[in-house]
Length: 308
Image (tube, rainbow, N blue to C red; front, side, top):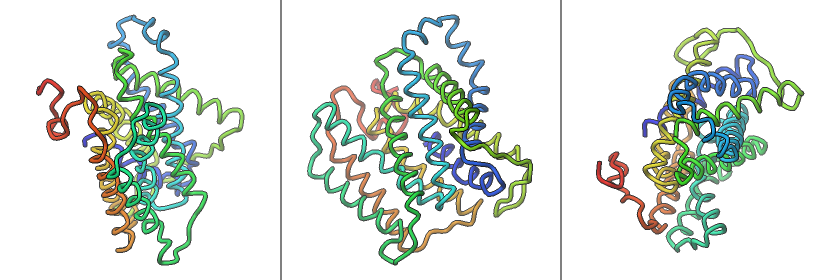
């Protein structure tokens, strides 16, 4: 929940930067580079010269950096540049449904009827969230970016929960941030990603701040701190339960968007948001608990499999 709350600040902070003249790719690149710099010393202390560990698991670290960090963040920032923060995040957090589908295809873990019902409820909720019933305008490109971010966040939960490699969480996060940062910088240099930045003050509903304040906030709070606590949680809870608890990010993002951007959803969209969250809860409840995975209530309370 701590990780989810920290992540929940990113959309509102980024939207302020984008409105001030920053491109989504520039904002996300600086966020990742700042987070990588913050974690550099702790990562080195954790490795204690064991560089062979990184080389041995270079594929895992690279996949984490490209999918769980770069793709997820970039697509989400592209989405919030075109639509409300809360709406983009609600689409992104249909990721648990994608995880269920992936586990079904990859491991043959067939979803239960309750899981299927939950997916249908979440789908109905998305229709309300996107304001389709009321005839609201739909930014198709924004929705596609949010769906792409959903794939990225699904890979974040799956890769973060995999502790079979023996890679320490801090090393996985730090290495992934470095890979993501280098990849985004190279993409900007060769012209694949547009890069625009500005030193103009950033205007939020609560006031105006210098441009470097939100940049540091999304790098330190919504970057390094959020990823570090998120991986630590996923290692203890598993991908399913971690993605369930992380739904609190939706609530946090809606609150921060209302405070910082004055983005308040309509009553119909609130009903849709509740349906999306409720559908994902049904998806979670309908899935069998793998052998050896801790029970839901102790895990949410912060206990590991041994009850500590």
